[in-house]
Length: 256
Image (tube, rainbow, N blue to C red; front, side):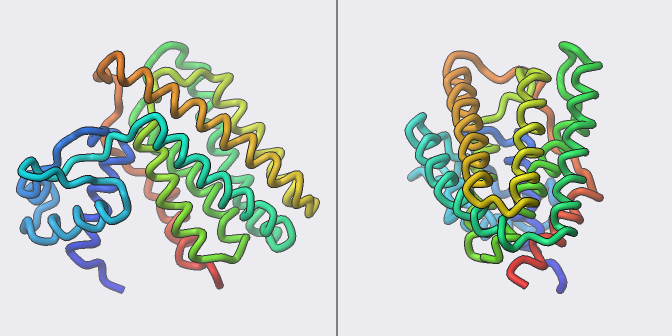
């Protein structure tokens, strides 16, 4: 199916939100974005309206469209909702996930472990664009495979949108220690093992631990953003075609 202009604009803006180039509180200019993408401002306006309906953008009277800058309480509510849905998904997936899906989850986690090794070598150096992009894509792919294994397309779409919001509203890549990253990979490995053994309660418990840890980090990021401005270390947009294509394939085959 051919990609429409609105879809192109939507994916471009969503990508900028994820990468941090459009940070919480940033104003969106239809004509500037249209020039960057290479199209008229009408599909850009339509894409912004769609992002607003998804809760990522807010329209302010007489001021225009802005990236939502949520409160601490809104971030906590977001993770509460994710916990309810993703723990349920983990329970369902434990009895339905295939060996191929488990292997793919392991492959995504292996990509994350590669990045952890790179960060350990880099020491205090800031994240590179490629590292941020690959981490986001591999982490998203891991979680989306779990959601696909739950065999619920509607839940997959809802959680996918919630994950985007969580990444946009609580990201300070420059302060992620290698220990923090290792913990994420270790929890992923425990989740894979629980799914492989069909242990539904354990899978839900591991997912709950994972999300609560993520909530704590996101709230911490939010509080830091209130006291200082994000430095030039925040990466701009980037692409990782191979990982992105794998995620698209997961989305296309969900619910099948």
